[in-house]
Image 1: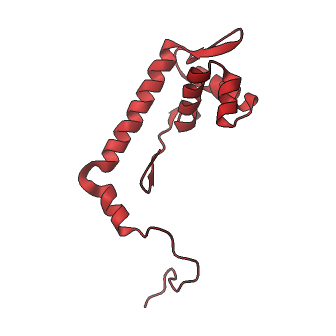
Image 2 (image 1 turned 45 degrees about the vertical axis):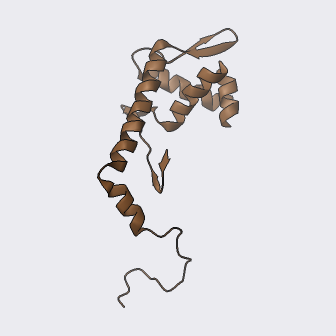
Image 3 (image 1 turned 180 degrees about the vertical axis):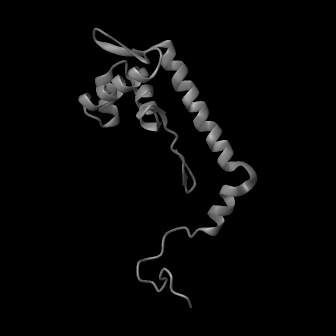
Length: 128
């Protein structure tokens, strides 16, 4: 998620395994929209195998499965909807925190709109 120049990427881990992050949350949204793991993967430009591995990892990281499969498709479980909603709330809280107190606006005001070209006379560690 990007707010101006700042990119916020919240990832929650279960041991060393990524339980959920922005891409996995987008996958849950796509499964909810399309009713299928394969259709969700296609919509996000992922292979079926990779999509399935992500779903399996998420299901193994939470006390109750997030995605339930059935003949002809898949759906989010009630727990999957709760996890997705809570994750999106964390993202929103991070956005609010980034905007609070004007710190983000101050950083953006100190930045150039685009980077200088290499070799334009600004060298690291060279005193003028």
